[in-house]
Image (cartoon, rainbow, N blue to C red; front, side):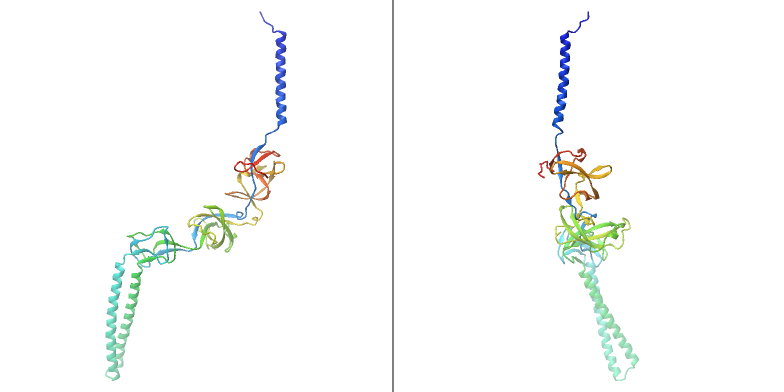
Length: 372
């Protein structure tokens, strides 16, 4: 037996469907009236890019003068008195050679000088006798000339022996290797017990005073630089400080392997904290330095294959997409030559989630509201 639903039940179901539809429509209308919620956005102002436009090179800090120190004589190193990193004063002893051989050589030359002086005394006495006989015409001029020549030869041998003794004594004094200027020992290449040749480098001394940054410039760009050109130097250890520098030296030929030219940039006196070996960036200013602006890389947006930024209207709190011109990419951000000014506010992060005319709540990098 088939049971038919009652008329009241059918009406109840119809009424509930109408109420559900009405409720859904009412919810949509309420949501449309409320509108899209205002989202926070990190905003910032472009920074002046003076000193970062143009070319950027990375190098390290060197002393203006670096000396390779070595003994003036050969021998066996007896002891080394300093280590790498030691600060030394002028004339401070760095290393010593074993003086035994040089002392024996000096003693030998002293004995040779004594023999030469004895021969000279004998030749002088003989010449004096022959001079007396010659005055009385007892000997011929030829015999006197022979004795006189022996005397002159003895004089020459004695002078040679004196010079040899002076050299030997100087060499004996060269057993001590001393610093020629105050500075820092940056390298050691000789140890106690090692036999070294004359002039072989034992230690490298970086003199106190001027500091320079050495960089490598490709041969395709070297023609753009000249001695005396201004530069801006930034130490990686103190990225918030910049120093002025001057291009002092350009190598006359490129490196055979890297095909780059060695360039030295002298730091000004204010860079006293620059330590040897520190890494530094060197900026050579370009022509667009006066107007270029630095923005975060995350702020860059692309539309139709061209770069753009979201600029915030401080009055309406709405963002608008503006085209920009990129002049260079840097580790700190992007350099722009056109499109924004130093007083503009731009969205610095999350740019791919924005749309034209969208209202945002401006905040800084610490998520604190900004009053524009």
